Length: 320
Image (cartoon, helix red, strand yellow):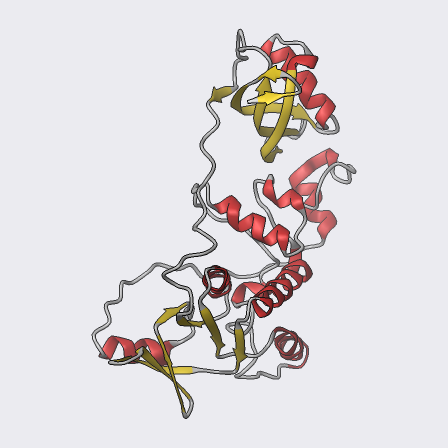
């Protein structure tokens, strides 16, 4: 690769540590130059792949730990202790945006959580005629109904935390964390950035956008789906999925029979009635483990002090 006339050697660096307050691009370049025994001018483009905060030894100090893709004008002569260096992994291959096999096909996507929204986006981008069915309420109605639940104890069966536009995660503080190491996770994060999330989530070890941020992203993704021709139908509960000799599949939505070439079920864990009917029809199911958590709230200042010690309140630190 030629950058500014140089023949660049590209590699990935894991484990570069910089103290709190000294972790800008200039400091990163100086640390790379020292560690690699190279001139700063020889260091080409740098891409931050991951950035995490090491707060384990609060007395010694807090450190940012980086994973970087680095371009260098010459082959490094040495690597510091604690760094791991290797080739840049190949970029993840996204599914094609268009697929002639899907063009013109009618596809029903059931559920508008993350799986439903992203599958609808991919299918519509490939030319399929997509109808997205959601048994719960649109996002704005959900937010009002859940506020009434928490404030007054009034429960609405059609609009609650468990289901509705955006899925249950719409009320989970916008956490975008997964234990998967699959490089395609970045493609998902890039879609969130395209929907308005801050670009910093591409490099954070524990990315999150906050409750308001994730709701804005859900709204932006819905607008993209509508622009692609997706029919978005809320409060449309799928009661049964039946094979159809002519169309492929037939979905029972109240008194309506909706026929389609393919159906993608992204219904989450709250569609127990549908699960029972599918199980009775012989559809194979595998049990999946799940965790139940409790929400405990503390004052932010208290959390910061316990996480960061004497560094709490530093302008370079995010909320703990």
